[in-house]
Image 1 (cartoon, protein in one colour):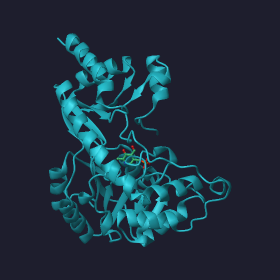
Image 2 (tube, helix red, strand yellow):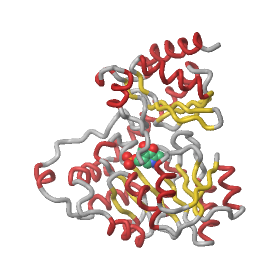
Image 3 (tube, helix red, strand yellow):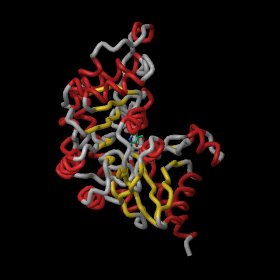
Image 4 (cartoon, protein in one colour):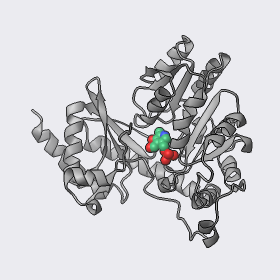
Length: 344
Ligand SMILES: Cc1ncc(COP(=O)(O)O)c(C=O)c1O
């Protein structure tokens, strides 16, 4: 089964009959500013990537965790897709709205999914012993809900007491380190997924990390085909993770751009209720309105990410605009006006 994801400009071009080059892609949470990849040395292209520990050391330093708790994977997608099969079958709490690959992976691995709407509901489920494991996306994509590290640690302790796991997807956590659980790893019962795709704007190299007890890292590693991480991905990833000056500049730039984007969207689309991370803003509203706005934007070659309706409400997610707010402001206002004219 394959799920729909953001960033598929080719599909949008076919669907709306607009050439690929004309689209403005706001449908992902990938930073519009990427770590500037230098010329990759010839031997990196030429030789097989036998791990030399350099990538894992750079990652351990960056995530402030133990070197033994880290496994590089071809995108955090790889880890989140394969880890559920390595855990004891049970009932797992999964956000009703969240990156849908998690639900698919846990179901396919034979777990029973118990949905939660928000952090408060997760807290109740765990307290009442109604789940064995919990999956938290922190901050959540697309709702942008952010749980405190205190709540996560309490959840971890409660689940751990009966041998359960807390699994935290921190794909969008790079700008808000204080809620991250990465630095606690390794600790029994805790798994953290990290991505190099979003904050570093390097989704194309397919690089992410599993942070988990060493035995689980070893289990996943032994199931991976040899050389699963390409040599350029290992080389680029290690250099990006060590570039502290760029990371600081990127953090500030994203925080500033994220604030402006959220403010603009709140003003421009008052019929949606917005919440945001530094990498995207999501607006919740009536399903018919979201669908109409998605279409009106697409006719103007602006691709947003439209999430399915749940109980009559949908979500439109908008990644940061590549060339600033001004560039997209007119198109967004036009699309909103068109939807107002269409509504009864
Ligand atoms: C919440 C979340 N986790 C994980 C992923 C997978 O990202 P990657 O495999 O590029 O690290 C995505 C991709 O969009 C995501 O939204």
